[in-house]
Length: 200
Image (cartoon, rainbow, N blue to C red):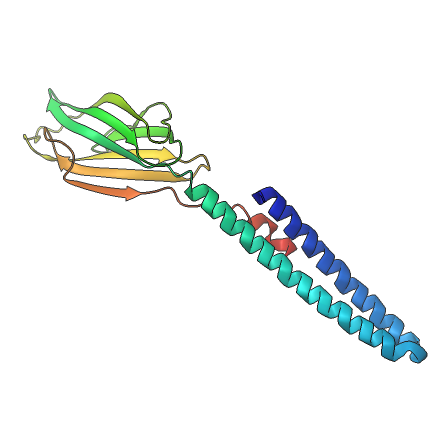
């Protein structure tokens, strides 16, 4: 069952719960006006109220199942970018050269490479799941204190198809492969069912 169908069922079930509760109120009013049928009407009103409660519980459970299903769907399409290569320094420029890899299970949109958090990140084309491409980008610096083997950070920024942002940070030394330390912040799961909670 798709997330849309589950959400529609949850909304319809919630509407049914509201309608049944209104029926219960109307039935209770009729019970007060007709003393001859009061006992039977009250029993029916109580059963209707119990049905309304059960329907509301069912609506909440359907909405929770829809949210869980959507979470699994998003997790199955999560990108994760890594960089295999190095950053060199030549004539006041940092140059990143290597392979950009998407080791995740979803396409990485708007991938950007940011060398040493200097200047602006370089934008590259989207990268499919389990794909790789050669990249080379550079950034200028006026820092006169640059030394060989200096610590450098290369940051990869990207988005999932659900528009949540991910980030990978590679920490290493200039002129050496960037495998010293990697920190990954995968794109968070987006709650796309919260807009329907008002009906539950």
